Image (cartoon, rainbow, N blue to C red; front, side):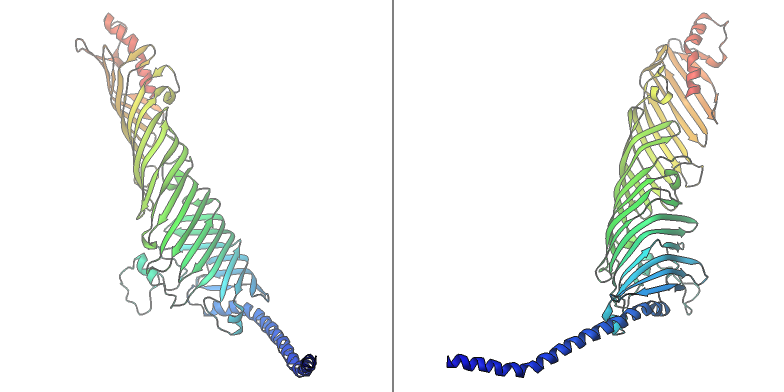
Length: 483
């Protein structure tokens, strides 16, 4: 008991001695909270000022950036309205009705503004206009595509890789998030214009590590027309030349907008995987179409492989259904010049479906070539065909073969041969111009004696066997015209 009493008495003795220190600690904590709150409030107002200060001192973007209003919050978020970015000539580059950015509070308190001070930027319903010159240099970045005052007039052109390496962050780290909500983007290069609507994207940027991209758009138009773009990928920033790996899809692209024919509007979709350095990107994937309608040819269930490299798309293993038969195709397409060369081989094409009649039947094999230099109206289609046995009621034949050429509403057939038991019908030329057919010579060579009869000059008073031939083969004139 004495010991307990002494301890209790000791506790009562210690309590009054510790109480002043407790009050001091509590007062210190309260003061710290007040100071922190005051600093946060100061940071709140300074966060609004950081935008104007940054825009005045920035040396990367050409032109001027202004806003009509800024509203700062104590958590470091700044909302803005009517942000406008104009180039030195007064042309509008970007217009943002509303948006926000978030800053690091302690950077504002310490007045230590760094590339990492802005941690998040959000743009709502923004409209962008980005222009590239012939060397793919963006015209809104200072130092890219511009000649320095002391630089000689004639200087060596820099490659894209050299320009990428010259974008120097001066060893500073950028670590921020960029969000685009329902934006519109317009890009142009040497007269080619591309527009995208309803763009929603997120870019997680860390210049010392990687940039992660999640991008999607609604319809796009201009030089290329389609119903949407989707991209998910990552850009590795650690190598000297950054590399990108991404999955990219272009939905329901209009072939005519890419230069594939003048009135070919059946949508096609590309699903690609892109990889490699940014200055030498390559892509592999697939192209597919539900249907494709060309003059005199209707394709269904088109599916094939695509490889992209150095501005050229190479198509291979392309297969389609054509008139109950099949087509295998391959070829190349130049993205910049829009020139293309496509080659195909069709087998077992049903003439009844092609000609929309059951009176004419045979299965046809065909070699097809489509060629264009990228100019409107210069598409040239050519090839050859050969059929198996068939009939044009009531006459049967062993085979039909020939060579054809089609270019801008002019269809030509050459060296057409129709083989039958009694002989061969040959025509040196059949032309269809704007839907009107004209026929050159059509001759029947009898197999038994080698006689040659011009079927276009047959008359009723000829010999009996010739009259019989006329009766049997008169319908072939109509068949050739129908072809």
